[in-house]
Image (cartoon, rainbow, N blue to C red; front, top):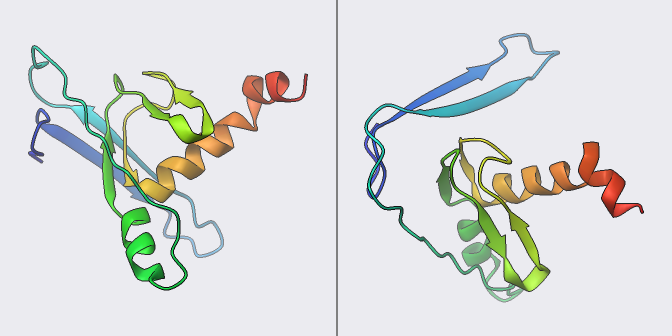
Length: 115
C-alpha cells in the first residue's frame, strides 16, 4: 500500500472467525526505505456540536496510519504519546484515542496515575 507522505507499507490484519471470540488485530510494517525527513500532520477535531453531530462523527472515523516511529500529542488534555509506545497501526482517530486511553489506565502507566 502506498500512502501519501509515507513509505511503502505492509498492512497485516486478523479477524478471528470464531463468533464467540471476536478478536481483531492489525499491524503495519515498513516495506521500503526510511525517508530522510519525517512529516508533521495536524488534525483538529472540534468539540461535538449537537446541532451537527455528523461532522464530529465523520472526524472520529477518519483513517489514521501511525508508524512505529511516530508519536502524537493532545495539547488540550496535556497528553503526549511518545514514538514507539503504541507501535505501528492502521486505525481511526477514535481507535487511536481509545488505545491511548487503555494504555494510560493499564500496566505501568496505571501505577503512575494512581500514585
